[in-house]
Image (cartoon, rainbow, N blue to C red):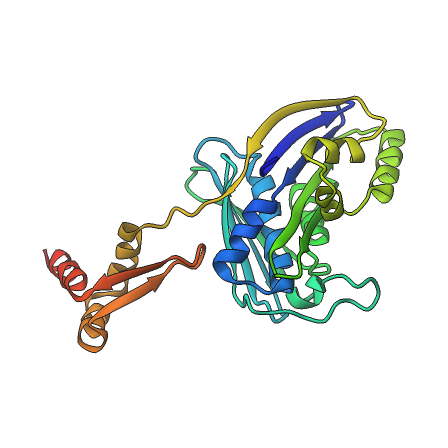
Length: 293
């Protein structure tokens, strides 16, 4: 099936994005070596970001940042209009006891209820569009629904799910965003609410073999559905040796000299994909010469 996203509308009054993100969340888990609770939280943020990114155009990008007071610290994901997403969690080795109420991973407590959700869209303008809302629960989906209502005045339902296997790998991941267009009929709203209440858990549906189209059919049951676009999704980072060189240069010549004298080189790790780049003493000396020139 592969990771993919579909964009749909129904009755001319509902729009919906649905995504299967199992492979890309698995890749994030592998790269960052996250434990189950951290995997679930990061997977939800990556899934949300890649769906939000699908509404962009051209070279536009979106950054979703969740900053709570829980042990996970900050979670960040960056997505573009082509279905590419990257991200990280500040403390990847966090795993909490399962919730007593339902036996599920306690993402809300790991993220924390006190904090902020930030969205920044780089639309190739002078300044990026930014919006922020206080966290509602730390469960990510509810927090994102609050963002859409408060910052974009769009009533939305957001479902995000990650099912982690016993070996810490990801069995299933995905989600959907359903939004009401202005002037939606009350009857349509009531029917949609009932569908959402009766729909099965997203990650369980995907684990059972459902794709994005079937997620849409589950949530928009009884409505006239129109599918508009399919997008393949992937965890992908644009870091490179050259870009990390620029980071080193930004530290200044004194810091680079210190690396040469004390370490005989430098190891630089990309936050987003955990890839490590080795800069030899010769590389750093070349950077110093270029900086002087």
